[in-house]
Image (cartoon, rainbow, N blue to C red; front, side):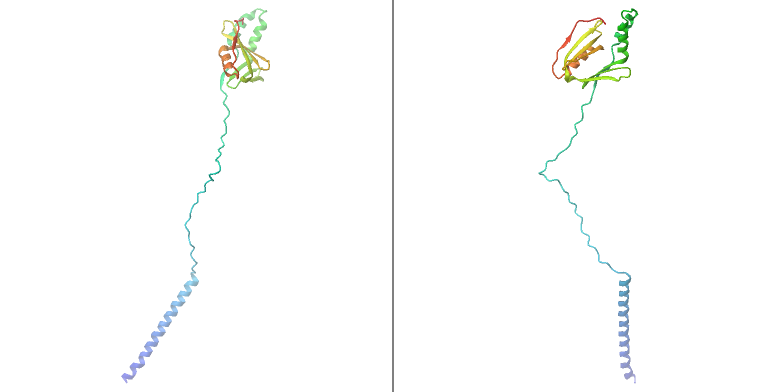
Length: 200
């Protein structure tokens, strides 16, 4: 009886093992399927290395650089009015009725007249508020004359332009230096002409 019951038990154990194995495999498959449904896997993107391209201009085209030409700066050589000695001398002589018109002219020159000599032009400013203004370039100067006044402390500068216009600058301080500067800035070489000293 004992020998007959032993073979009967073996298939049962084998069947159970097979069933357990089948159940385990089914469980693993169901877990695998559920994990794929809950957490889907996406195809991974291929990350290519980034390459930088340096593009240069073609060598057959000339490189043009635009440089803005700066205008020439204007520098002042002299800026002032008539010499103060002209005003003082004419005020002293103005007590005589004969000299009174010249005294009034000297007063108007002292207060309402200015001369400006720069490296670009000559400017004469006159009038109560300086509204009367005349400018001319050194290129149009044809002739320069100086007339010393008193004992040569101040003087007149007479500039003749190429069109025949004469510009009379009265009672200019440092008149010789200014006249020489005008000659040096003129386009054509001009000889300075000086006359003998005259009055006031």
